[in-house]
Image (cartoon, rainbow, N blue to C red; front, side, top):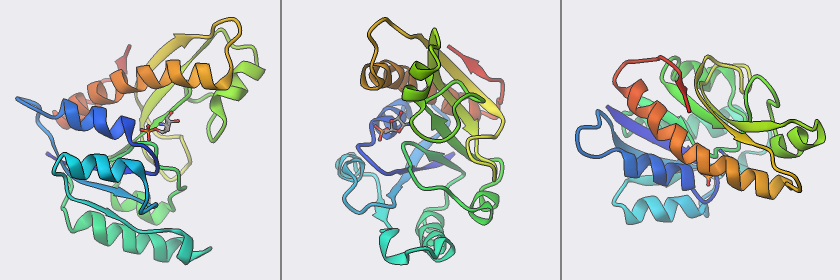
Amino acid sequence: KRVAILLSGGGSNMMTLVDSMTGDHPARPCFVGSNDPNAGGLAKAAAQGIPTGAVDHKPFGKDRGAFEDALRALIDAHAPDIVCLAGFMRVLTADFVQAYEGRMLNIHPSLLPKYKGLHTHARALEAGDAEAGCTVHEVTPLLDDGPILGQARVAVEAGDTPDTLAQRVLTQEHRLYPAVLRRFASGDRTPVIL
Ligand code: GRF
């Protein structure tokens, strides 16, 4: 299976996914892309010998469709079987999502369905939750809403800030996403619960 990974930032999730696709793993990375040509994750992927590319979303302004057409052309040039969103920070239109229906995954730093959208850790702390975590789900047209493929939980600790909680959750993201991808790439959609 060929896996394309989309990111917007440092790409720590991309790196753990790439590092996991070795040996008898049924998938290999075929492309790493971004909406930001300066995303740190692109250089990390290139250093691993993975084809990379970016479409800067800013020149497209409000024309989300034109941006996504350009991004899709880049992605599809590498013929992925699976697309993994990993710290990709653009909301995607239904057209884009439907082009990859049933084969696009996303990792979200909350225990979905709680805290869809942004600032998940601050919201969990604000609510006084005892637990937080991350979720891998299939991407569907509704934001952060598709079938859940995996979850990992962490305890919220006294004195936690959004940053300390984010770090604890990110550690679990790096365990969860590779486990979900391996299962998904082998055709098994049983959720991974860590
Ligand atoms: C992190 O906040 C993570 O929780 C979310 O995307 C952000 C950046 O991740 N999934 P990465 O280091 O670029 O993979």
